[in-house]
Every structure is written in C-alpha cells, then in structure tokens.
Image 1 (tube, helix red, strand yellow):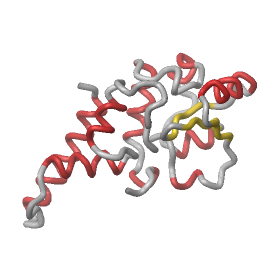
Image 2 (cartoon, one colour):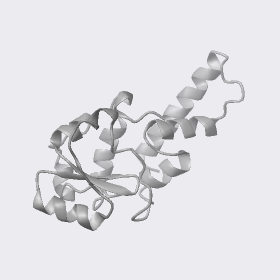
Image 3 (spheres, one colour):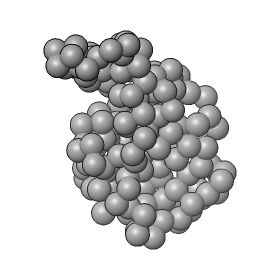
Length: 159
C-alpha cells in the first residue's frame, strides 16, 4: 500500500474516532470516513482514490481533481481534451507543467504548482519531464503526489 493511501486511511480513522469520542458518530462507519477523506482531496469515493493513488488507473480514466485548487481559477492555463495535444504544447513550452484533471489535461506555470502546495523546483519534475501524466505511478510522481496530499485542505476543491 502506498504512503498516500495510508495517509488517507489515517485521516478517516482519526475522523471516526473523534466522532465516537464526542458522541456524534451515530451510524458513521469507517467506510463513510474513507469516502469523505477521498472526496476532500478530489476523488469521487474511496475506491476512486485507491485506484488513482495506488497507480492503478489506466490512461484516459478519471484522475479526479487532485491536481487542481480553487484559488487557481483566475490563472491562465491551457486545457486539452487529448493527452497528445497537451504533450505537444508542453514540448513547445518547457517551463510549463502538464497535469491531469478528470479526463482532461492542462498546462500550468510554477505559480499554479505552488498553489497546489507542491515545490515546482523539486527534482521529481525533471525526472518526469514536467509531465505528471507520463510519470504517473512512478517514484517521482509519488513524491509530488505526497506533497500535494499534505497541502492545506483549503487548496483542494470542496466536496
């Protein structure tokens, strides 16, 4: 199991334990807390998070909104429906970063990456050629994804 999934499971268990301590748990189960923890970081439910964060999603599948933040809507980004088009645009702008969003792709600059709580100067970006899609599931991707996961909750889209 990846460290990211362990982190989400820990968040879910902490939430459930806190609800039990303060008497608000009611019918709340660990499964509910896992789904909420996944939703809070941009996934539809726990299984969606488990598949994506575990490196098991196939090309073209929904990658969730994990690599997007609410405060970035004012920034100018290039959006693409097809990965090949996004990849070509990245090759034309080597300072950009290629990120997935659900079943789409977009190019951003370093200030966007900082808003995600991720270091745009991290060596993992170089390993992946600034392309989170190409590097998906690898060690460099996991390094950056863990930085993203540990970003402030306000940097994630609300459920």
